[in-house]
Length: 545
Image 1: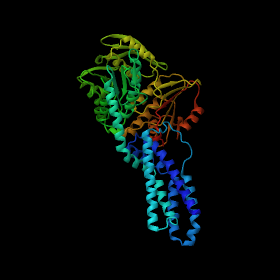
Image 2 (image 1 turned 120 degrees about the vertical axis):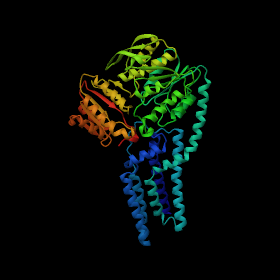
Image 3 (image 1 turned 90 degrees about the vertical axis):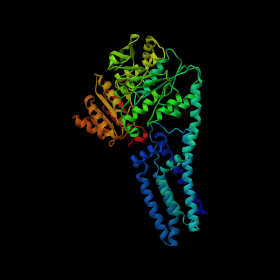
Image 4 (image 1 turned 135 degrees about the vertical axis):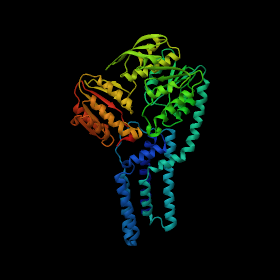
């Protein structure tokens, strides 16, 4: 009876520990958008997290002790039995990391996450019961030979992360059915509201900022709904349409995201846009797109989905977007700063400073108007021009557009200027992760002429084969602007470090840390009044070293 109780306790301990680990891997799967290929890629890059050192040691000792138990005589077995179970229980508990890890984007137990967690847990427990059943059938005495079960459970525990893959494979047809249901509801609703104008915005970068800017401008005349934050997937957009969109809204501004060819077409078919905006095309998500041509083709899916009387809006300053604009024969509005003779809407007399920007908005058909904005950086002027072009397309006057521009607030984590009242200014550009955006952030930082310029960055991700090259260039550009550099993550920031060396940067002013916690401690030690600190990109939890 005593042994039965002990075996039950050990099994319960294993089950609870397994569920605890599964929760962490569920978080990583969620951060990888529930895509098995991306999750596998994360596992390959994060083997120290998937297979921790403590787990390896525990597995090896567990297998060795079980093997020893099987070959010794009965009297020694009896002596070993209890100690083996106690060791195994303590071993499992010691492998767990009980420290509450800081998360930038915490696990959200959505209905999908709950379904996946249940299916993954069931897969784990099915394997456990199969193991126990087989040991009982083969040995006829499962209690005596329970250490065999423990050895197998140790292996299952070690490979715990794979049960999320199994659960996700099982869940795939379920999720497809659920998604299709809500997609069809949203598809029908988006077409049922009379006089609704939907504006679709896509691009490699700048689309979220452009969405917020455009919605603010359009609010001058129309009741406008925009998708929140970075909602840009079919399910995220479907949720907003089904739960929030109604006949009171006259304009719906929606951000369309994609990581693979065909995905813009899917969200464009869902939202039924009458106006389409392409903000930019660049080296972003090259890991999944593989080439710039694929990115161009995917972004252009938005324009192809516009109705015959739709309006296409293009950023003519971007070389790739320019090519798409030139081949488009639908009604189009072209905006830019660099080639004003070739565009419909442009800006002149741009003055950018640490408090924002002023410029003259020019519409070749309607004249000019003076504008001011709180947004930092020349690239944000381009985003504003995109919003102005949409305003023109839906009938706003120049005065209404200018009034809307003045009311635009900085988008959180996108070149957001923060003054904490300590004499040190902070520029929060943590959302960024692309070469053009990083370059623009450095241009903004360079405008500050008082104090030292300090950058904190872990580098850029999802650039495919170009990642090392682009991060090295980033390091070279940092060297031309910054006085002090804090790199987060030694391995990942090696290319930036090399770029700094290439420009003969004073490496005594380079600090390498392992986490943002360490960053805060270092900054407090080195900053002085009038310094400016740029936080450029903040890697999600699944990319941390």
